[in-house]
Each structure stands twice: as C-alpha cells, then as structure tokens.
Length: 446
Image (cartoon, rainbow, N blue to C red; front, side):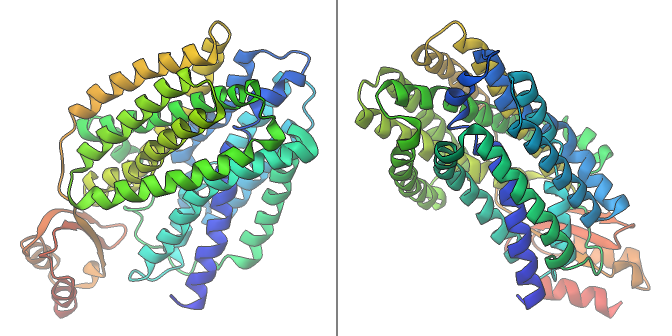
C-alpha cells in the first residue's frame, strides 16, 4: 500500500471502531448502572441496549445510498454528528426515557456503508482487499476493547462517563474525516460496496441469503441477551462492576485461542459443519452458565460462549459475501448489516421483557430454545464452494463490448457475472482456474 492508502485504512478503521464501541461499550455495565434511574425497569434497560440497533438497522442501506448522491465525507460527518448528539443526550439523561432517546439517536449514525465506499474510492483495486482487511480487523478488535474499557470508564465516571467519552471521540473523528482521511479521487465500482433498492428487494427472496441474515439476527440477539444476564450474575457472585474487566480479559484471550482452533479446521470441514459446532458451543455455554455456582465455572462457560460467538461473527459475513451474486455484494452486505443490528434490538427487547418475570438463569434456558430453532435453520443451509471476486473496469472503452463480454464470460473458472454500465465495470465470481491477467489483456486488446 502507498502512504495514501495506509492513511485511509488506519483513519477509517478508527472511525469504524467508534461505531462498534457505541454498541458494545455499554453492554457490560448498563444492566447494573441503570438501576440508579428513578424510573428504572428491566424492560427499559433492554430498550436502551437495543435502541441503538433499531435505527442502525433501518438506516444502514439509505445512508450508504445517500453517500453516493451527496458524497462520502459529508454523509460520514453527518452520521458522526448524530452519534455525538445521541451520546450527549444519553450522557445527560436523568431518566430512562432520555437514555433510550439518546441511544436511538446514536444509532442514526449508520455510516458503515459510506466508510467502506470511501475506502474503496481512495485505494487501488489491487490494494483494496488489504485496506478492507485492516478495517475488518479493527471491527473485531473493537468488540474486545469495548468489553474491557466499558467497566473501567464506568467505574471512574459512571454510566454518563461512557457516553461523554464516546461523544468526545465522535467529535475527534469529525476532524479526522475532514483533515486526515484522503479525499475521494474517483468513484470505485459500487456493486461490491454499496446497496441498491432493486438488488436488496431481489436478494430478500434468496433462500440461502435469507437464512444467513436470520442467523446473524439471532446471533446478535444472543449476544445482547447474554449481556443482560452476565454482569448481573457476576455481581451476585461478588464480582463488582469495577472488577469485572478482570474476568473479561482472560475470558476473551482464551476465546481467541478457541477461535484460532475453529478457524484452523476450515480447510478440513465445511462452513456449515463449523457453524453448527459454534451454535452447539453457544447451547453448552448457556446451559452451563445457567447452572454455574462459582466464578470459575462461569468463566469457563463464558469462554465457550465467546468462542462460538467469535467464529460466527467472523465467518457469517464471509459466507454471505461468497454466495452473493456477482455485482450484488454491496446489496447483500447492506441487508446483512441491517439484520445484524435488528437482532441487537430484538435481543434487548426480549431480554428486558423476560428479565421482568424470570431469573437470569431461566432466561438463559429460554435462549437455548432459540438456539435449537436456529440449529434447524442452519441444517437446511446448502454448503457452497468458495469463490474469488473480480471487478474489471474499462470495458465501456472497448470497440466491441459484446465480444469482450462473451470472451470474459466463457473463460475457464467463471461461474457468475454481471455487467454494470453506469460503473463501466464487469463483476465476476470465479474459481482458482480464472486467469486475471488474461482477462485484463482481453479488455485492453479490444
């Protein structure tokens, strides 16, 4: 990567981390600290945790499209301003309703699509996967960071302190976008980056993609429900909120080891098999946590839970990306992100409702029922081959476009294609047999 691409990758990754911190940092503490509000109820805690996901879910696709119309940076800055405003409202909240309002407003900063599109715009095609990989690593890192620093910040400055810190970071990110993130030099082909309503509507009826979208919805329902129980259970066992990070740190590190083991099995076993194994780990974890009587056993089953969760979180989007039709990856991933955040919303609502009437242990047993239903959905998934994606530009400049398209489509290894006239691009899905250099020569020679 050159200096511009590296600067873009690091700065956009930092902004993306902020978005994920907004979702995850309050999760380990909100179920406990919200009790200080005069109108506290468990249901309202669930709404506060899930409210962020609701607006994120509905605005993911529109905000990405707006960035195509009004520009990447303006939309990212607007999203950060909305996130900052929501953080301040939540930070100054004196009751649960104000807290919920702040969380919902935070979620309107749905800038993921615009960030990914800008990352594509400022990077060369051969370096674009590296830029996206850096951002992807940052997303995973943000989850671990949020679980560790959330309790620490809450211990120092309370629940409001978490929101004030995120507001400050959002304000800093606005300056990063304005002055550090490279400006858009050209528009990269958007078929693999941004969604379109027509494609989203068509993909909604794709049975395979729909099952994966339901899967990520249930996964984030589980993680939200999980964090409505775990902090309370830890406190009941004598581990107060200011010390809970001491359990999270070894648990998360151990789960990374488990994740590495599962990832190593990718070559030997199918995605479907390892996905089922991960769901079984979640079932074992929920059953074990519901019966845990000591911190040690609770920590062990928490490791099991995070191992399964981390594998699914890392591999579900890769599966969606793999099966999405050529030129429709942006739409498939936009819809996937909407289901992801809607799952967080549903998890908050469900956990809030259940915790009003049942103990944390009983709620975890209820979660097992959902996981068993999820297992049935995954059993009906079809195992697919792994394909590589290619975007070839400049096809509109060739003298005989139809001849070039036919030659490319008939090349060995090509399994799917789509031509985008507006992007002056052809999108290909292909096996390892595909010869990229030969394809580029075909375009240049015509």
